Length: 401
Image (cartoon, rainbow, N blue to C red; front, side):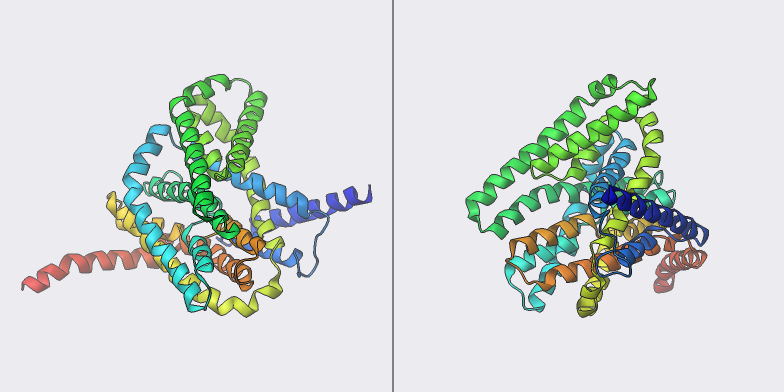
């Protein structure tokens, strides 16, 4: 009884604080994500007032938060749009992997770590945070923008790549060799293909089974289906985020419309829990020794990720402001980066400092990412873009003269 009472007090107090921080962030024109993370640091391991009784609650809530963020993204697009976007974004996905995985691998070697640590750090710097980016796009009202499908295509390609990368990484860390890695890869590929086929070919049957006329049944059905598929996907060593996203893709018509309206408040609640949990499990005392290396790595890879989004948007004919919005939106790293670091540290086969470096790195990108995403909305940035466009138009005339 005492533990339950403490749990209720801790959860209630923290949720109330998050509500106040969210209101403060919107009043000053700032995404609430950095404020949620800082709140987690204050009340987490090594913080001012650690909350121990509610940690398990926030851990489960954080998992649900990522799943809801991704299913809501999936509800915005149809299966046909997904396939078309994936085909057009395949070159961007390749550029994304090269530009953002290589710096992590090179940085590991510069620190004197081995090739296993290089593979781990490459994955940490490669993949953006779908959960953070989905929240930022919703907060800034950009879900309907022309560049948003480009951003989502890059994220989906990354998530699908993680579905192949994580089993291979697990095999490498466990020393399973080539055979073990090949089996893990085969299971991951088969699971991804199965979920894709069901979502694209039989999505209309799933929508038909869920009635949009009964809100209660629809909410329970969509939420239950999403958690079930995400759990099965994770069990098969495929990203739970990929499974949730494809559930959203599979739903269409009135079912998708009504599900979006009903799930939005739940998404906001559990998304806040996800971000605060990230701070709760981070010990601030581990960050100072690795802060400078993490900052250097963050600066390099925030630049390469911005280039990735910019090139991807330019390739499909997005105007200059949209290219910058796409590039800057992709900056945050998050849940996958922490999962990768956690797997490596749990295996005990990599440098112990890697976990602290990964945490500091992710925190830097997650805190600065939502702020950078707002840059294209500032007047001075728009003026700079116009001046840049004018220079580009007049330079050929000057050279001709």
